[in-house]
Image (tube, rainbow, N blue to C red; front, side):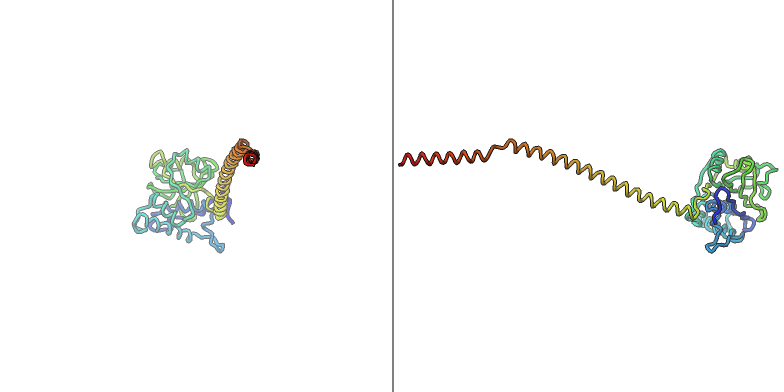
Length: 280
């Protein structure tokens, strides 16, 4: 059964299970796919859930596609950038929708509140020592995923790929994420994915809506054609009425043909009578 979008949290997939450990972008984006499907991506057709090994296989599949985009062997890449990740996502999850954006921290927070999962680039070198965000990763360029619908700015759930499998997701402060993501300047490098957008039910709704839109457009076109025909018929009716008036006027102005014929016949009769008198 699909989880409720606002309550769903994806299971943790650890980058530590993948050698070499060069795919934090892809672990983070797998978290996005989990949120996009409310976990359906991890449910087999016959019902059983994916375990950690199965989820690692999905990350490796994403890595192969990202490496294909980069033009290197999967194990040889020092890492993968946003374009590599978006390419891999589109190939592995063709019905998904991952969108690149550059946003300020304020804009990123607004996206989270409106149900967007964010995969965000950064570095832990500026993260406070007390933060659990850097417990398992060195001060290097890194990628994390931020779950949508945060309770408040002191309780933000994060997919941190380098955490061990047994440690799971981590809850951190928003200020820690701001510090992490300032590595590349004011506008943070982000991939956003809408939570719950690509569940089976959502796809059915979109398909039905597309059919409704098609039927609505066809109905509107028929109405337009009907209105045009009505206008044409009205125009023709007006023209016919005008011609009828003109015809009646012609009839009203026409001479009395019966009277003319009678007058001619009377004239012939008088002429015949006079001729007979002259030659009688």
